[in-house]
Length: 231
Image 1: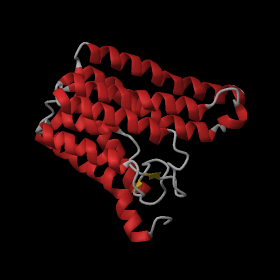
Image 2: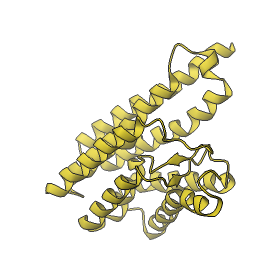
Image 3: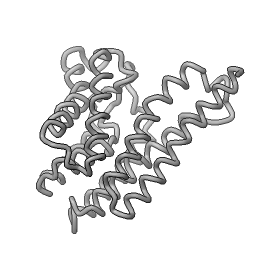
Image 4: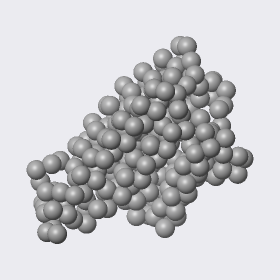
């Protein structure tokens, strides 16, 4: 297979994320939350693999007819933002006015963030919370906290999208990558198990979800405090 065909195949692989997004949405419409999140976890795995593949086969040079970055952003908005926000509202975890407030905050702020040209830092981290609502809302499904706790968390992370606080990319941020990548893989395993058990994964899996989520959310801020905003 020629290099251009391999690069084109990477685009096709990225595009499967849209199919998994549709399958997740169909499951959400039927209130099959475990199945919905299983499809989102599959999409999350695709999103974690397509970037390294795109760089390996230099898709910008070898398959320039398609904009892989734009394709990735479209799919990310569906799987990271739109479908999880719908699930948060439709499931009743946040109902009434709090549900409306949450979905308006999440969808409006996230589309602004995804189009912000300053979202990436010099070390390939994110400036501000990168709109990973699929991860946040999966944890809310698993622990089912009081609605006030969920609403405060949504509001705080929405604000954090526009603060000069770093959040790591577990694949592309080189600092602590030997720890960050296993943490992301463990999170994916715990998340998949939670979805497989229809969000009754047991206390150990819930603890694992909370610990890995805390690391992925907080590692960038710790790095920024230790090494400075450009460190």
